[in-house]
Amino acid sequence: MLKPEESVIVFIDVQGKLAQIMHQTESLHNKLTGLILGAQLFEMPIVWLEQLPDKLGATAEPLNSLLAQTSSPIAKHHFSAWPCEAFRNQLAELGRKNIIIAGIEAHICVYQTCSDLIDQGFNLHVVSDCVSSRTAENKNLGIQMMQAKGAQVTGLETLLFELQHEAQGERFKKLLKIIK
Image (cartoon, rainbow, N blue to C red):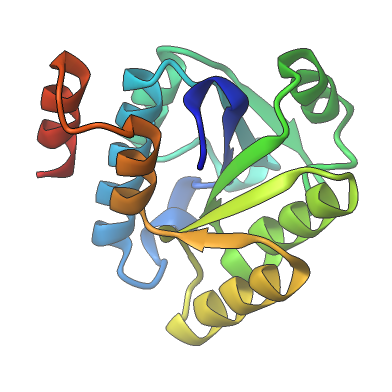
């Protein structure tokens, strides 16, 4: 079972015009908002990445504003985040082996980052409704490839309730508002 104090969210490349043409983009953005709010509720760090932000643009709103409350984006130019020294340094500083991954595109940047992190000994959890690609086929392919590589596949609601562990308390009440 995942525990908030042992986990980190890796949020990948939900930027500019590309973020608006993902398969089921409105649902994706709603789920990503829930993931960010959930991470904040559980006081989990978010490592936030942007692919070539000078060309692709900044992270889409309102995600950008929510993320900026607790972190700053790391610019990258490889599809995988692993070659980015700032990314590796941030993960090392956090010292957490459980990585919860979300973002776009599932079959490119999310998959390659996931693959590299698994190769480095991290435990990966892909939030299936918090990743997407321009087509459903590529989203599904990306999830299948990550799972074949050894990643666990979960959904946002499953993840948040797993992190919560119990159906009581103030945090549970706040969690219910995020889910609804």
